[in-house]
Image (cartoon, chains in turn green, purple, yellow):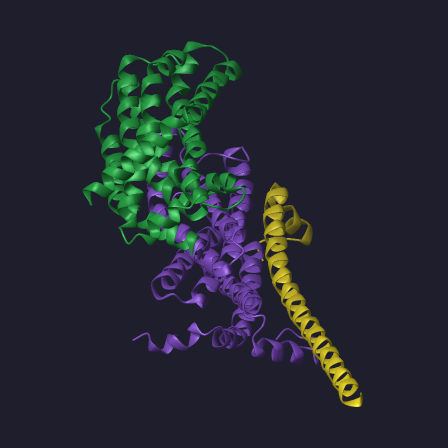
Length: 222
Length: 252
Length: 76
């Protein structure tokens, strides 16, 4: 099992970094969306601070929807997905590793850029800390549950919009609790409860998503 | 315990069951809906606060309740299909989705039309309306996913997964949206809380609820017949059915 | 009857637009879904019949071909 996990981890990381431009696209999208908000709504710092957490989280969700298609697409087109599924190894484990790599590759740039985003939207330090905590807990949830829908739609034409339609209702509770946490931080109120709920959803996803993803792949790959 | 269900895993048996059940769902359903509506519109007393606008409740509440029950029923069908690999279960699931979506739309529309006299605005992000909107997206997602696959066996399984993921989400969404709403809209208190409802108001509501439930069952059964025919096109029993229908033009 | 006259009933105490819009749109939606299901049913059965007729024609044509070519062979 360890060699399997290591092997896939290394392979996916190498492949991801080979196509750096493709990695950068969701990030650019994120930056552009966040830049559009002050331009569209007005630069008043008070307003920006109020909508800031929501804007960043919405942009993160949209950017992750863009990036998520990559998860199984290349492996599907070159046949390695089929090989993985025929290999007799645990597809759930393989899926879990791939999601992990995908999350690392998508989330770390976001984490690096987040101080800049906080600056653009006039967030306070407390809010920024809360934002980072919600991102650390919430983005793996996005990747794990998103992967289930990606597994179902891999190989479909125009899967992208369908993916958004499928996943947005699923992401709404996460959005609500994450933005509430940051808003509470803005008011100097405790936000451990919101983080706990996101954490609980994450635990549920970590325990069950890999198997759901494996089943989804089985369905879509026949 | 569930042995009596087993014959209905075969599409032909399921079709026969649908044909048998259809009139028992459709006509009582329409009757109860009409009766409940007329009672509610003309004979039930006015609300002392909202006057006659509150009569919208006789459609809004049944459709809101049933939009959620239909989703749960859809998820149960998805579960049966996924665990026991019954094609007819997936056919039932996809038969329920469109009528569920229509009922959800009705709940949203009547909610908005009721909101205008109640809150002064056509749309308000109150917990119930927002949850209904998300439920509509869940329905549309299942329908869209089913339509995206050529192979309907695959389509059923894929849509089934999303229906199940959705049903796990429904309580989470409800809880989170309600909590979100009380946070952000503390000032707006819903006028329609849950007062002890007068019996003259309760009866038409219950009749409309039963009527709509039967109606949803009728449409489900009709659409399930269609789905069965589509999937079993080349079977001899479908060919016989089509040939026989040539005789009379009533729906078989 | 809660209303004194038909006019009062239609006016719904001033809320006529909202009440009748709600009931009207709901009625339309439900009627539409039933009619759509019924008409799809007829269409599916009709397509099945036409397909069957087509298959029968093709089979008959093939048979006629086979008989024809057989008789040609035995003839010569």
